[in-house]
Each structure stands twice: as structure tokens, then as C-alpha cells.
Length: 361
Ligand SMILES: [Zn+2]
Ligand SMILES: [Zn+2]
Image (cartoon, rainbow, N blue to C red; front, side, top):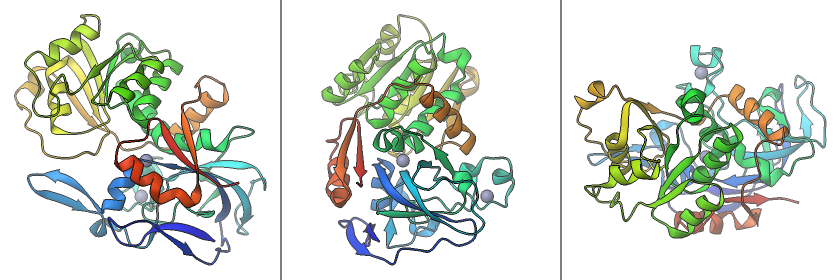
């Protein structure tokens, strides 16, 4: 099998030939049909996250070993299964749940494998979808997509699931009644807009520095798209930045924000405009340190909630919505698998509007 691997951090992905595995026990071997290229793959490729105050989180120290086949948004067709893998149809396309845990701890037992402290995620700790084949450890991580388009469905495993789980943390009683502020109009931002609509939400105000992405957000139904540059949200907020956001929200108090950037400027601006009892859901991994005025956290009764992907049950719920036709397709750009490195590079340069997906015929 061919795979496109990180051999050294921050160096181009290399095409490698590896023996196609024979599935053992409950394992399932799939032929990859589509593999989404996600922004978090850039952090993986870089080998770490910026924690602020000059500290970094090294992925090498967190169990990521090289060479690594990235790719955690995968749809594949079953080609072989181990003797203990039951109930799968060959030649059907399945969406792969990649956020797999140890299977033994309390989080895993509670169905929260995405909170496992000994994770074995596909495309992070184990080989993922930037390849023509992928091994999935158990059929329960596979969701039948029927006749749906693999390239359209693959991104639900991360960008769809992540935004769905973030919206659930806000709660339907809030997002149905109040516009949500979303920082970042990349793949996740557009997905959030789509899901807010699908879930009967009141809509969203999007903040981004890139005019093309703001336009894409407006096209996807954003109530307003504000220029993060004009809000000076990059180097410390403009004095009236919070008021501008409240104005875009129809002058009403802002109850919830989803920060898909996760930078000091975006988190502090959200802190300023959220009303009492508001929720800030932080998803983005841009990094850095924050200097929230701590006394205001209790005084405003703010909830600052980190959200990391989502669990298997949430992915199944999301796929129910998709199958019911409630989630309009989002823009995807298809590329050949062999273009994995150049696609990752253009994402790194911020050139991808919507979602880039590697496809295999
Ligand atoms: Zn991802
Ligand atoms: Zn676990």
C-alpha cells in the first residue's frame, strides 16, 4: 500500500510503500475513498503546539512517533476483516470514527473516548487516511454512509464532529434563541454555519481576517461577517471591538461564542463581549497564553469550555442529521491522494477556502 507520511517534522510528506496489512481479530481493512486534510494536521506536521510563555507541547512526548500517516477524516470501503469483526458489508463505504481511546479507562467506558488519556487516534497515534488503505481496530468505529459521496462525508469525522460537539456544549436552548459568534471562517467555521442552520439555530456572526473567507461565510448564511483585522483582534482589540460585535448581533447580549482560532486576541475579545452567564467554547489550537481578568470570570459567571473533537455517539447523531438531508453539503475541493503534501502546504498558507479532500478512485 502507498501512504504519504510525516518522516521528519516540518519536512515535506514522503510517499512510502508499505505492506498492506492483513486484519487480525476485530480489525477491519478499508480501501480509502476520501481523506480530509484538516488544519490540526498542520500542528501534527509541525510536531507540537504553542502553550504560551515560551512553552510548547511536543507531540513526540505525547506518543506521536514517526513516520506517521496523518489523516483522521476518512471514508473507506471494507476490503477485508479479521475473524472477530462482524456485521460489515464489503464494498460499502464507511465513515471512520478516528478518536479512539485505550478502551479500558473510565472515559472510554463512559463512551468519551475523545477524553481518554492514553489515546490511540487514527492519523495521530496510529496510521490514518493519507494512504490507499487504512486499518480500523473494530467495526464499531465504522458508520455506513450508504450512497452518499465519500469526499463530502469524510470531513464530518473531525470538522463536522468538532463543531457539532461545540454546539451541543452551548446547548439548543441558547443557539436556537441567540446568534452565536464564531471566530474563524475556515473549514470549521463554514461547518459551524451549516450545522447551526441544520439544528434550527438563530444564526451566527463570523469574525475572520480574510475577505474571501468572510464572503464564503456570508454565502453559507452568516448573519454578518466582521473583519478581525478591523477589530484589531490580532494585536489587541480595538476599543469598540466588543460593541461592534454586539451591534452585529442585533444589539442584544451575546450568550455564546465558538473560538475556532484559539489565540490570545480572540479569547480575550470573546471574554469582553460575552454577557453574564455566557459560554466561550474554545476549539482552535492556535496557541499562546491568556490574561483573563480572573475576578470577572465569577462576576460574569462565564463558562470557558474546551472542546476536543467529539465522541462516537455524537458522530452517529450527526450522521443521522446528514442522512436525513438536514445538513446541506459544504464546499469541498478534491485532490488526488498523491497531492497530499501540496494540499497540506496550501492549507498552511491559508489558501484553502472550504475543505480540501484527498480522493482515491
Ligand atoms: Zn481534524
Ligand atoms: Zn481510555
